[in-house]
Amino acid sequence: KGKIDCVIGILRGGAPLAVIASHVLDVPMYVVGVQRYKGKIGGVLGKWDWGNTNSSMLKGKRILIVEDIVDEGVTMECIISNIAKCKPASTDIIALVTKHDKFCWKHRIVYLKSVPKSCWVYFPWEKGRG
Image (cartoon, rainbow, N blue to C red; front, side, top):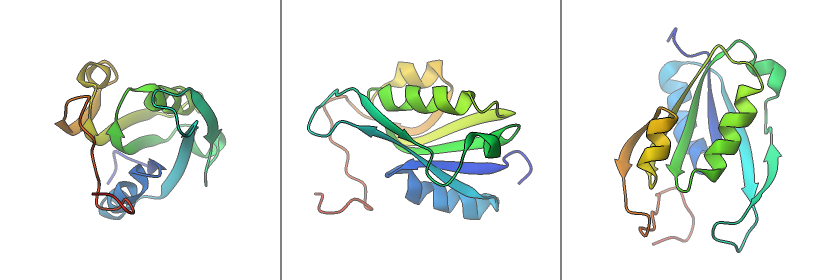
């Protein structure tokens, strides 16, 4: 505790991980969402959803963004852009898995595992998978 003021989980996959991080760090947790059009692989971004937070709550805060997977980077670009508008003191980003190493390096995203772009990743909190 001390380096992070709050955790932001990206709905839906990042939320379970954000709950864990929030408990371990003993800081508040918020969620935000970015909806991509359903049925389209590589679809364009749809709606940004502030979830249970707003821009004024994040101003000047040291934020940890938590996501399950960074795939093409489109969703994460939207998240980075919208959170930056809040003028946080700092933003760190972690993800379990990436399919886009160069994107993560460019944006200083820490990840646990890199997988091929063709790989389909299943997480234990997903319903009806595997």
